[in-house]
Image 1 (cartoon, rainbow, N blue to C red):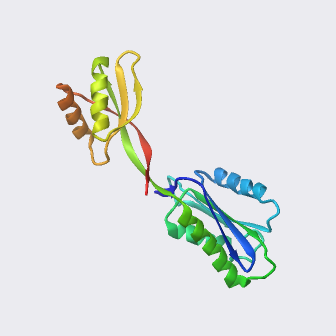
Image 2: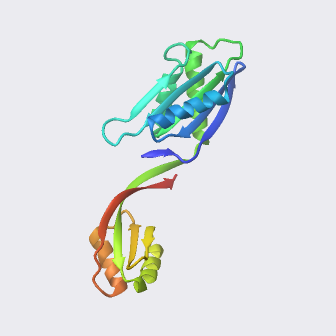
Image 3: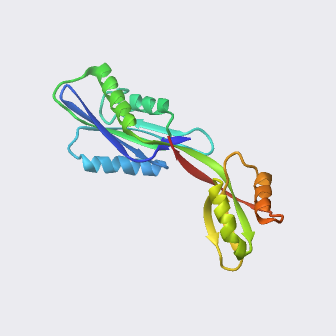
Length: 209
């Protein structure tokens, strides 16, 4: 799954009409609608705030919505959503704010303008890939924890949590290609004794593109 790392904004001008595209990462439909409301508050005097968003669903198809916000039907929100869909991104919301410049663009001109506005803001956006991977829990004597943690970090493991209240406990994520048995063999070779690990909930990690 791919999304954006940080908000992005761009502006184009066509026949004196300004099209301000604002792009935000939104992980729920509620967040998408709040972002749309935020942009409306930021530009209260604009004529149109056309919108499109795509929200990932763990089960079933993604949620995709769009609005022409007073522009002729099918000339704004739909074309915007098409560009977002073709980008392969999800959990994103785009609002294109239009300040009318006095010259009508026609239906074809509006479709091109709103599509171009989204294409431009996407060019400005830093994207990330969201990778789901398993995590594990390791219990060991406190005296071994420092050595084991250092070796894990050096070998590309990600330490997620640590607890040294009684015995040491480390939660970590392993490189994607590593199986549980391979991890246990690696840890056993470091410690000089047999080590077993427990599975923990999966985590989602962001990798910038």
